[in-house]
Image (cartoon, rainbow over all chains, first blue to last red; front, side):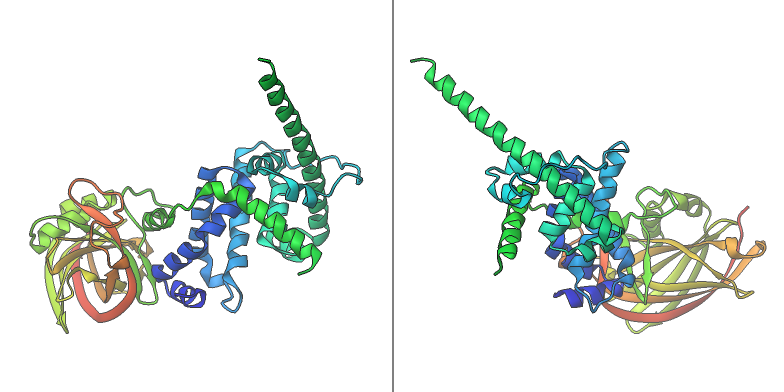
Length: 194
Length: 236
């Protein structure tokens, strides 16, 4: 069943349509939710909530448009709300900017050697900063679309993206240095018996 | 591909790799269970919300064991929703029957008080348990259409009879009479079980030997409407 048929079925109250959409999009939705909230169980709850919301709001969906961006908007918003419920207020404050002579965050993200490096960097960011990175680089939205998803002006999107890039730049730089230091320590331990 | 797109693609792959820890769980059974048990504004154990939309339904059906007469099947249906317990104990027998095509509907029992009207009926057809209620209206003799609340069904395996309960909210009436006079208009839909699975597949919350699962109107065949004139004493 293609998306168009599934959505038509869903609009008729047919759960078979929803099942088809769950099968097709649950993977992408789970990964998107995880990148924002960084908790597997929470990501599953978020995606379940998102599909149920899609079921309830499908009448509002314009069938001439693609389903995925509309649904990923729901997923991202649900993930942000879930993180906010868990975190005290004030964690979304803007981080200090770093000097621009360091490598770009995109270069650092590309160069990050381990999954854990990327995850640690994301974990040290605020949920809003993560959502900006995820929407821009993972979901592939432009800044206008991001503004629509997050319900904020494009100027605010640019600032959040800038904040996120700066934060990511600093974190990945720190992570890379830390990783080199740990490797050096292990080498020294191996040499001790001699 | 431009340099910028190449960079974006590489970053996307990094993020995708980071997110692979979530694996590939199947969320559908839990989503379906949650939809089946959704009762906004109503705290009801093992209950569900019937989706009444454009003549098709999503309802829960409890599959019991053994062979039952209609009234026995209704006992199983009453257990679905604790709010229906007072109806189970105080319903009035009716026994009104209509047959259309290969489908026979019998109104077995009706209960009414100032807060709740519950109508218990059985459906017998060659399609067996794959026939379930669709749209239903309960209109009082003064023309008030009572809002629908919940619904649920009970069936015995290998039986061609299913029992169903529909509940309505009588608070829309200006004053509750001592005797409810109302017309039930009922449409049925032939539905198929999700994935063509048997009654043991993807069970909802269930106890004992009974199991509940969702009926999904993938291919809905309409039956009816069936119309019944009901006269029932109102319980205090």
